[in-house]
Length: 199
Image (tube, rainbow, N blue to C red; front, top):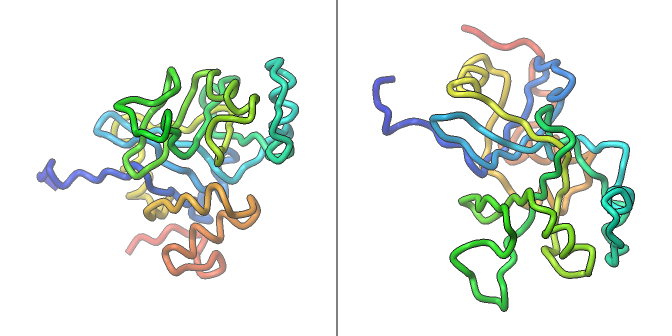
């Protein structure tokens, strides 16, 4: 493919692991891609809960969580990179209802398609007080691919791709997210062969 203009951009897409992908971090995973460019890709696994919940996380960072409805929500294993660092995927928050030119938080990536990913502690401080985004997914660590790496994994049939639906991230029970993401493609897990198909 000589046409650079036809380069794929999977930002705001799900990567859905094929059955043959046996890497522990990614087996049966759904990854939300926050960024995909010629330099590589960055995403968060949205269906692998860790053994701690938000209530425990907030205690560890010495913040009192005044939103009990999210205290039992799991903290996710977002991927194998920087697993000690927090990443908050959330719906956009606009100051005073107006959409500003930049996020209300210090370190936020605005993802074309409507979501934001924040790495600064101010979003957690906002959540602690009862403010902040209503829908959030908090992960420790992220998934990353270097230049051309994701494209080669796609060529090896390691992943399926589909445009992201925020309802899968925020409104679908964790154990149903893999099947729900597949259903966006009209597929069911049992129809996928564990063997990568090379004709």
